[in-house]
Length: 312
Image (tube, rainbow, N blue to C red):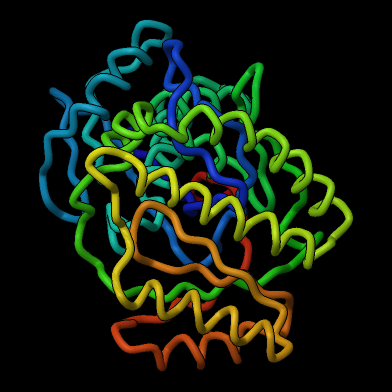
C-alpha cells in the first residue's frame, strides 16, 4: 500500500487568527481564502511496521501529526504509516505549508486506507490539525465558517481567474509558530474586537467576491490583513512577523494601485507579501516587487485546485 496525494496552500483574504474556546481546533472567526496553484505539497503514505514522518527529506518528530493520527484512529482503522512529505516552497515561513500538508495527508490516508470520506468530511478532519488545512481541500475561493467548520467552495478558479504574486524575503522558519502566536494573542486587549468585527468583514467579502467587485475586495482584504497584524503587535510580547522588505512591498503595492494597477496585498504570519491582481496585471506587479530590496524570490501564480490523489 503506497498512495501519493497533492495539495496547494491557500492564503486567507479575510483572516482567521485565534481559536474558539471549544475542543476540535475550531477557529475564533470565519475566513475566506484563495488556493494557490504554483506551490505544492506532495505526500506519500505507505503501510509500515511503525509510524514515521519525513519532511523535505529529513526524519522529524511532530507532536501535531502524532496527536492528529491518534484522534483519527479512534474513528477509523488505520495501520502504522510511513509518511513522506515534500514542499516545493519554503516550509513554516508564512506560506501556509501546514495547510497544504494536512490537506494532502488526509487525502493520501483516505485513498490508501479506503475510507471513502467525502471531501467535506476530509476538510473537517484536516481542520482538527490545522484550521487553514480545511480550506486547501478545495480550489479557487473557499470559505470556512460555523457551525460545521468544514470548508466550502465559493468560486472555482476559472470563475474569477485572479493572479497572485508572492514576494519572498525570508525562507527561514518563524521564531513564533502560528499556533503559539494565536494562543498568546487570545490575551491581547484587542482580541474580542477582532473576533466581533471579522464576521462583518467576512460577509461583506462574500458579497464582493460573488459580484467580482475587485475594489471592494481590495479594501476588505487589506483591512483584514492590517487589523490582524495590529492584533499581533498588541500581543504581549508583540508578534512582529514582518521585515523591512515586507513594509517596502506594501508601500510599492499601494503605489502601483495609485498608478492604475489592479492589485492589493495580504500578509500572513510571516514576512512574505502576497499581491493579488486582476488578470493581466500580475506581470507588471511581479517586475516591480522583484526590484524591492530584500526580496529574494518572486512566485507568480494563479488560483489552483483542491487536494487530489495521484492520477486523478
